[in-house]
Length: 337
Length: 295
Image (tube, rainbow over all chains, first blue to last red; front, side, top):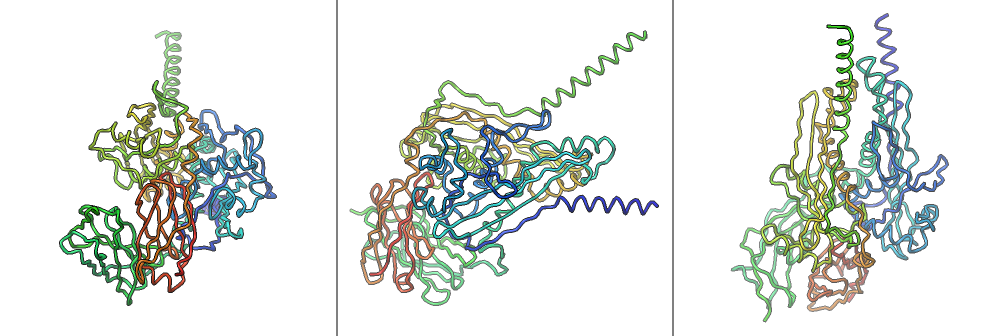
């Protein structure tokens, strides 16, 4: 009898947790190492049919008195900010939100009351937005199809569902799409320790901080394919290596009559470059034979610097970069007479 | 003891217990404290430079770096236009006011922000954890005067010790803490809270201009058989680069708004590389112009 009760409780627990586990899916049709300039458009709430709902002005994230704190943002604004912050950490180049939010109304995508015309924004092709005034390579659309907090007495459930779509300005091709739906619950499914906690914990689960933290986790998971160089396939090969470097800047002072010649022996098939301090950035090197790289620095008439280190860089096809500072002394270039 | 005295004492204890509970609720709900000084100008420019964090070793370098990036992101999200950290030159050893005035003169920033981390602790008790982060966010005007100051202490607790009513939640939180996920949330909550407390700045109409980068079609001049000079005109004080099939080379600002470099281009010409120049303003917006290397 006791084992039967334990089995029933176990079955109920597994059923409850199974109901409230996250579902994520994505498609990736471009190399995320490509530094695309992305305009993150204002996000929208959508209904079950996917129709855009016009946002109510002044609607804050839900507040439950004594339990949760009020935020000034709507769920759409809050999630858009999370996405902006997350994209800033990756190779994509998001446009300034101030620029996007200022230019959209100026070009007819605002309503007389100052709100965005979301339906018009989401019905306009990306090419039109990017080419005509935003000057971007792609636009990122965000649709929130679920933002719920439900209280069931012995359980409370927070649910977030978001869909992100990255559209190319050139032809409106879908470069990346990601759909995430996840839950965070409090109460029976999280193992209450007594009658008091069985009653109190579902109520505490209505704290709005829980749904905000859940949103942050969902966005982080949804955008993770964009952060890994080359997509989701983590390379198992070792990163590129630099075996030897050299340059002919003998004595440390360069001349303007001939270029500085640089040599590097490193992993074959990589993108190689060198820099001289902060004065000269990222000059490409040529691979003359597998693993043997050659570069030249030709001074401009305006170039001059003092005691700058020469650094070499190699980058493989997965975006991994190895660098090394030349072992020779720093170099200087006197101002042109 | 008389029955009335006992009843009175019991009543007093109930009131005391209730007061203590209320006090605990209020204390736990204490939020950031913002002070707006008389010198604050709500009509000032919304161009902001964010100085390196002041932390005196109270926080690990990777956390400090995450805090700094999160601050820049959140300021951008809040409508400020933030100077790119790569172009920011600031020396903590030189005169503070002079450095700020230099930033304002060079880039036109109206606000200089700096976050000072007062304390940071991560305490893992195995059965629970308690993490805190406290600091001040200060806004200065170009003269170096503090105009706004926001002080906040964010704390975070969990694990079985603090989630005694939810076993699974407690274990889940403890595991997340051991992976460092909770500290990321602590940092983002702290930054979000302090930035949200900043007073609104209307900004100037000219602020949008710094986000409108300009760049011309590049001039390509063959100097020797395999070497070419590539020059381009555009917004001043910008970061310019030329890209061949995604491999970038930096251009130097020869005169204000005129950028050049000299490169070996034989390999790029031979494989017909797609070339474009890009100009990125000090405030992060960029413009590209494609061109042909065929000579």
